[in-house]
Length: 154
Image 1 (cartoon, rainbow, N blue to C red):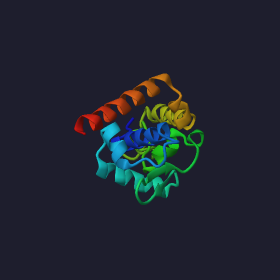
Image 2: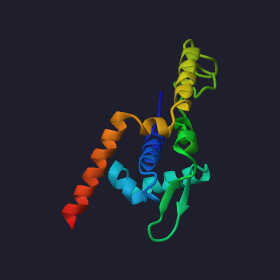
Image 3: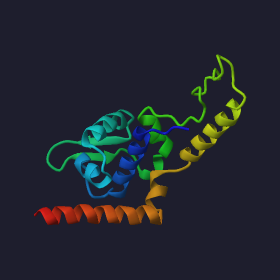
């Protein structure tokens, strides 16, 4: 199974935004700093997330991005789909041509695993992740680290 950096970073960035909902637009620079994801990479991801209508942009001073819908309405699989990513455990990307054009012996095993992973990610929303104690603890640590860096450079 392969979930690339693109899908992981998109979910991480969207969760970061969800964790800061209610604080106004979130800048990509803030997400970049908290999550240690390069700004150019985030810009590419957010172009796709905006096209998928998962985020909206706010221009001008204090601008950034807002979730385009409530965190409970955004599943992890929807974020992954928005950045043209797939979670597929088969070697043939589900085409059933894994062995010289034919289906391999374990194709259906890996295909079923892909379906179960997809179903799991369909059932996990940003809101559910936001309420996890471990996620809250990490987000607090990240906010404190960034705030400490800002205060130290002042």
